[in-house]
Image 1 (cartoon, rainbow, N blue to C red):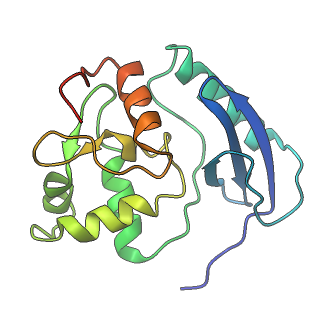
Image 2: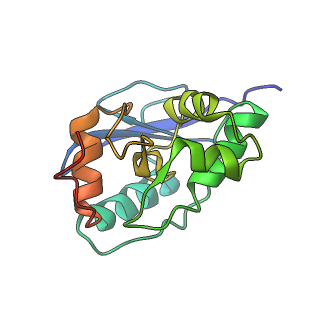
Length: 162
């Protein structure tokens, strides 16, 4: 599979810190925590601005669904996992095992965890909604503190999650 490259990116201030948002011709191809360089020039576009606006609305509690075109780049299995993540409703969680079952790989919860870790579109493709089988907060690319922040924002009681 040939990986497409992002054509531009820009860094936006969000309530939980800066997010770098990158786009290609098809849609948003990457969101990263912090000021992270991507392929292409650092310049906003209508698409990165729309993504940033929708993320701001999400953080303000005014948006539960994103309707921006997405263009994640990954393996066939990763793309399948990321698509499954998009079905997890706002304010709910799933376990890695449940996602593995959803993608037709019932014993593949570790592979699901690896795909989750490579999710190029955190928040929009809600990998933060995936928790351990024991109900614990487990790794998150943006850090467990941000994962807890996002789950709390969605009204999920994280007080018993470690």
